[in-house]
Image 1 (cartoon, rainbow, N blue to C red):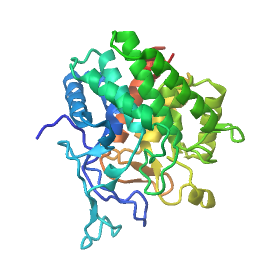
Image 2: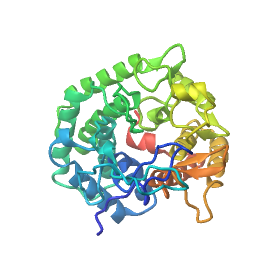
Image 3: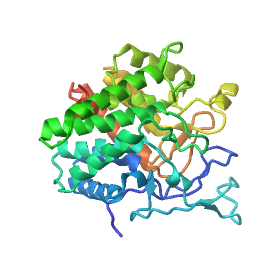
Image 4: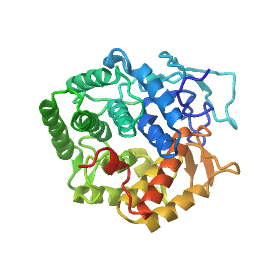
Length: 369
């Protein structure tokens, strides 16, 4: 059945960590993929597919904003109960084998920003308008205004305690920013002055609480001293220019602490500080492509091209990527083929090509002041 949705991967329970239990079911559709996917489709000329994806997105987010889920079934199913299949050994004995994904129960506040950004991007590219679209967006902003200061779960869907994740707060800013730009650029109705005050309030809080002066870097969550590769998206979404001193410090810190053999790990944990960074899970491939995009924004296109070529070299014989790559064991890890990795590859290819030609990239197009 064709729904317009895009599945995260075609597999379940392929391990992210050799000998670990980080085995998840990815046969679902994530709202987080919305902007990345839409941008990849539109810049590649797949307008009808982009429209189908946006229509799936609208069906998923319609209704009570408080019941928005990070992921859904491919046809929009809301209940994705997770359970283990104990009688299956798992890939090369790496169990458990899981069906369903309990991350659907999590509150992940960044998804409101991703949805608002995707719908704004659709307007910029003249995707066929939907009369209910703006009403849904206004409901999302109303909900976010009441809840953006709450704790939530990370985009990496940790199963531990909620935190004030910096990326989530940045994406709350993105949601409000795109609402403002929809009024300014398309003449839609909205309380723009109130939204501008809210946008500034979020921006001020993130810069105050999400930045660690001792590290000279933004950090994973408020008060933390650990890094997260999602911070590379700060200039991509227009929150700060890439040459802002705070952003330059963040990029330098990520390259120093989250990169091994040019491959980017998604976050820095206490466990990884105590061990070698490459113990356990592999480098997260979409984060590597985010670093390519960041280098393009810095006008370091030669460095971006070198990293991009290295990432292409780890594809399998069909040109496909999984979720992760282990630079020590020289193997792909995680569910396969991974949509997020391939969307990252496509977007980086377009951004690199445009950067070499001196053209505007996604940050300038969508949200940069």
